[in-house]
Image (cartoon, rainbow, N blue to C red; front, side, top):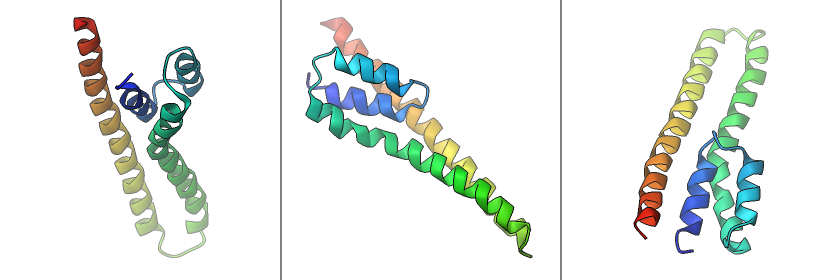
Length: 108
């Protein structure tokens, strides 16, 4: 149970695992409600990225009326690219750590 927080946190970082499936799996394991609730912090990077993408899409509509359209579009595109790179890096390192944790469980 010592790795419960780490496992749930890393699974929350990965956008590939549906939250409802992870919620169900967490409910049938021995992970405490406190640990599960603290690990919810792992959804923040994805939530921030989706909010940024939504705000950028809204701003694209507003830039059509302003004269500085090119620089706004470039900054929004770079922001979205960096957001996706951050999510990819978090997912990649989460997978490495989860593989390491699951390997330890296989040894036991």
